Length: 307
Image 1: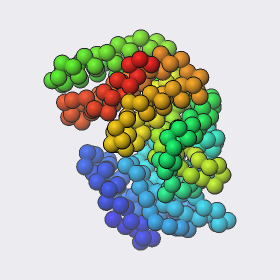
Image 2 (image 1 turned 90 degrees about the vertical axis):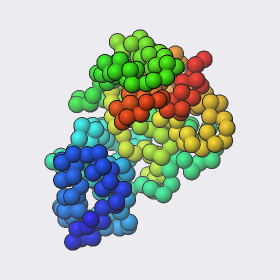
Image 3 (image 1 turned 180 degrees about the horizontal axis):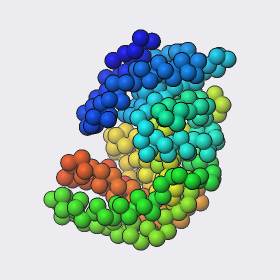
């Protein structure tokens, strides 16, 4: 799928929008080449490299009229896209990719160009990489959240409402017990959901090398809540590699200790909010038709059992 300007939409992105999407998603992906061409013209951008994509966005490397390198990011307007724009404006490049311009109608973003070929996952020493991530997370949490972002309290209450049906969908009694236990942890915490601006998806692959700073975060899904709810992606990052090395529980515990110390978090609350993420992930899996808790979720829970 391409435009007269040669904007090729990767097959993986087309599949992501058409496999499980509806008519709106199919129409948006069909118009994407035209939209990209429109934004290139409007912002007077020149293409400067191969097109990339994530699960939900098209990224076009570009140069501005002054020669500065940037990246045009296009994603279907949704609640999370709006939240990302709100968060990026508020963070203003502090520990995260800088938003240079945006189009409210289409949710198109013009972003600072980072090095997409080098993420924090390339750092071999896990303690060093996790320390970098913790430093970025602390900076992101320090910025007061603006109006317009969803709160963790609402998210948590929605999760708890979905638990009975999810338990019924899990045939293994042990999985049922785990889900109820995680739900009980959320029930204890839901009355104090927190007031920090969270990234919600900060892991090694969402931290890229940059020119302005050595490392910057990307792809936020901003939410207002307790910092403990932000830990799970970092604990789980690179799970396949950890599992293959045969020491995942030890690494998860060490990461948890490093993060909670660096962020000054109460360890019991942080463990509880991490269980909330395990609950959330399992609820999503059940919605997708799975009938068992993913082993990685169980392993993280085991690693934090005495934390």
